[in-house]
Picture 1: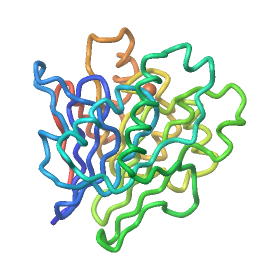
Picture 2: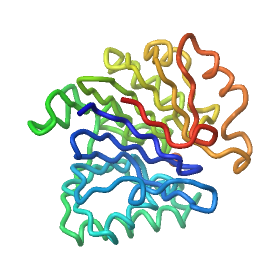
Picture 3: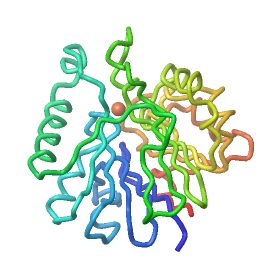
Length: 261
Ligand SMILES: [Fe+2]
């Protein structure tokens, strides 16, 4: 059975599934709104267990669907989170989102699910004999993220390179241009990929043109909702993705859930 990447149409947010042979890894889990024909992980895919759930950073548009996983008694074997420690300034900027995040992490702990804080590593942090050939590299954040001056919460995003025997993917979460520069400095050899998941839902600060050149993707995927936030997605930035070389540009708000195998 081929490996499949599913980019769910969850509105403004992100939910990505890597599927093979009935096993799944979930990268972020925003809950879609049925009223707008959006998808939810637990309605979209039938499964009794999740090998690995990765919450890339503490913003609610990346995790508010996780509770439905527990409500449906789906077993989660392991959770990865960012080691980024929220600062007072971060919390003051969006207290509700961060409060929800801490409650979620406590809930996960109470379920007894192992939580691992992951940072950039030269070796893949995930590989399994059950999933021959699949590897996940963490490209960001760096180990010293909590000592970096002028850091922002998006510099602490988990950015991934996923390798399967079929396609490879670079999944940008909400990384901003400066985050990409750091990734390029330390892990540029891991940037080339078949699939590029546009970071920060098409905001201008998520595009780093030099990095996109190095990824040189066959598919460019945007997970976004139009007319919700001014400037996201940003029209000029979208234009750049749309006209980037031979990359096929697909977006969840227009194309619905996108599956690539
Ligand atoms: Fe975010």
